[in-house]
Amino acid sequence: MIQAEMEKALYIVILFLNVMFSHSAPTLTSTQSSTPPSTSTPTSPQSLSTTSTTPMVTTTENTQEIIGESVASSTQGIHPDDIEFLCNNNRTGLFAHPTQCALYYNCSHVYQAVPTFLEQYLQECTYPMMFSNETGKCENYKLVKCGDRLEPKWECQYRKHWCVGPACGQPCESKYPSCIGKKNGKTPVETNVWLPYYQECQDERTLKITLCPYKFIFNPINRKCEPEGRTSAPKNYKADICSALVDGLYADIYGRCHKYFECKDRVFVSWEECHAGEVFDAESKTCLTPTEVCGPCGQKKVNW
Image (cartoon, rainbow, N blue to C red; front, top):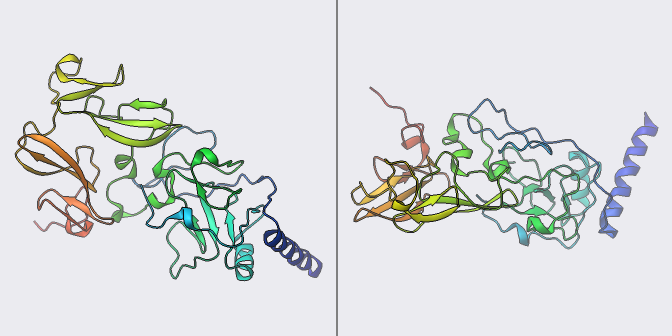
């Protein structure tokens, strides 16, 4: 027993010395994946998998600038006890998560209250960036070699968007369409083939959602915006969602609770977005907290 404890202590010391004096790292061999929240709730993310193609927007800090004097890229065998030991002896250390390419440990960042789905020192790159072992910071995913670390491709696979419980509101998948399994370029947003919007995909990642010009519709066959009368869209389709609406603000047609749009003179003006933690209330035409808004986006109780 004593010998085993001594061997473990020696291992941690050696690992720490490697961190302090070397930037090179052994190849990651761990395949253990983090346990996502239960999929029984509508907003729980699907488990990341290296073989699954089933699909699963942003932190307030610039993760690209989080770099300490000493960059540690060796994470093989690291567990919470090791991280605590290493960070106590190296307050500027940065360590890639052993199994998740978008996660990393930042010893200079100490949580007073650890966020849900994270742990002490653990932080996440902004979508779609990944943590690089070579540079010790979050980089464009094209520049990062994830190796055996799992590589999230959809915004809803990032822990920032994980949520469980009745207070979650609108499911993540209705806010951020997935490009997993889709070709690069323009593609129709699922379930809304004939609307005047489309998503742009690159390497199975959603770059942005784009609005076609006024009275144009996205043709899912040739993947171009065309005048409404020149497409084979359903007869009941309206190219401009504001054509039958009076001036004002309206809830997002995709069901994204934090977004809304403005109409003026029966013409679409622009998309707008609520502040973090707020949803759009169609009744008051303002952004409120979920507890002040009735369903489906809010949790306000109605007394009949």
